[in-house]
Structures are given as C-alpha cells and as structure tokens.
Image (cartoon, rainbow, N blue to C red; front, side):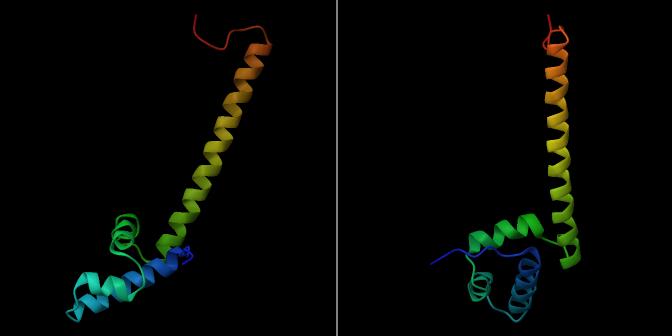
Length: 95
C-alpha cells in the first residue's frame, strides 16, 4: 500500500476527529485507527503539531522553510569567505 504524505492542515483536522471520538468514549487506539493512521504516527504527529491550529501549522512550515533557506545562505557565504581568505594568501585555519 503506497504511503500518503499528509499535509499539516489534514493532520490538524485528524487531531480534531480523534478528540471528538475520544470525547464520545472511544479508546484512543480505536479512534486513531478510524482516521487511517497508526498509533505511532498519531503520537509522532502529536509531539510535532500538538496544540497548534491549522493557520499556526501553516505558519510554522513557512518559517521552517525560510529558516532552511537562510541557513543555506549563511553556509554558502561562509564557504566563499574562507575561499577568498585562502586565495588572498591568509590561512583559513588557526595557527
């Protein structure tokens, strides 16, 4: 069976479904199975997205993408700086 990549908004909606089912008295394991994921997946999602609303999850993903982009930019600039320093005749490392 092929795996499905769930979007953050879908995950939050599935959390709501589990909350409703558990409030009706169903065990968590049964509620998790009814949304179509394993318990391990549910608890992993809960540790990552627990307590967030749909718009907050979307903003979190945007910030993570921006953070990754900025990290790449800093690492590229650091490498360029070291290359230029070495080409100028200085040493790149400590003496």
